[in-house]
Amino acid sequence: MCFVVLAGGILAACSGSTPILLRGDANSAQVGFSGNVDAATRVAKQHCAQYERVPRFLDAEEDIAFFDCVRRQP
Image (cartoon, rainbow, N blue to C red):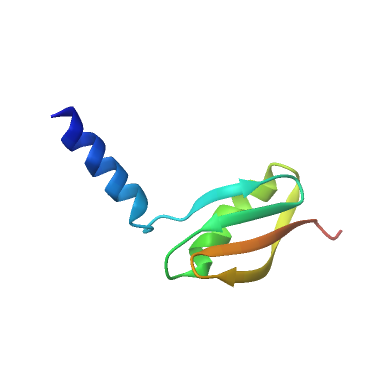
């Protein structure tokens, strides 16, 4: 039974339906996503906000979106 629950969780995580932060710091964020970059941008916004910054989209390759976290302009 535990194996079935664990396997289901792994499959759900690998399906890519929910974007997730793969790597990030005060200056950047890499978000794994499937399909819609807007969903990845929401994850980047949450990440960058921790540092009082906003995301700036740089590029997307296959299933990873790359963002810079930049200071807000007054």
